[in-house]
Amino acid sequence: MRRVFLGNSLTTNLLAGSEDLVVDIWEGGSDLYGWSLGSLCVDRIPMFLPRTCCQQLLNDSLVDVDVDFIVEGPEKELEKKFGETITKSVLWFNGKVLIPKRPFCEYFRELLRRVKTSKIFSPISRIDLDSKILRTYHCDVEYGELVNTLPLDYFLGKAGLHELRSYLSYRSAHAVLVVAESRLKEYAKIFVGHRGYLTSYVVSYGRSSLGNQIYAFIPLTRDTLRAELIDRTISELKRLKVIEGGIKMLRSYLIKYFTFSGSTEEVSKVLSEHAVTLAGRYGTWTDISVCDIC
Image (cartoon, rainbow, N blue to C red; front, side, top):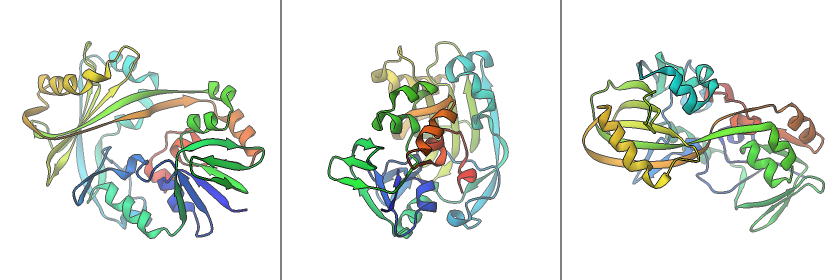
């Protein structure tokens, strides 16, 4: 029986061979897939790279930029929004860095077109580890080895291993992309520690053909009313004088697994006994970079 990859991710498309099968919920499920805007694709997340990497994708198509680092308000308030791990997170990465010449989603989509692996896009209903059957809404798939790159918390739920999910924890966030006039330099990061602000992390990411791209991230709590998120975010960005004038474009989406932590030792042990390999950032539940994946 063939090897099956769960998740149409960067990891999957770098590792899967022509004899393998890829199964995912939908084609554009990866954060790296971006948004489609006519003939353009727009990145869902700003992509900063610490070193030359991903030769399979970028072919040295990188440029140097200088990223400003700004903290608005007390840093202690940021820990309440993001968690204590924020000081170790790549969110703090700044200074001289590299970025792709084109939107990263263009390189990722080119990789998807090159890879000739068979793919099935259908919601997953259950993963039967004992019988080695992956059940989707449209078909059942038998496998010999399963390589998971989907979020580990999600995988354990579909596999019925709910007790192992207690080893993991995560925090969600809402991401908003705004194209508007801005006072910021082309590349800058702002951490917002002011009390009463939903917005906690803002990135100015260059001036594309669309205009100034401003990304805002809002960590979610049970008290956060999602219906008010967009309006409050725009209002806060104007109060911070990050954006000025009218909005030329706006996109938003939920990042369910924005930050995550926990022990995966016991999880990996149990899954290895069922011919399941964990791979990628979400699959291994490890906050690794695109460079590390490549």
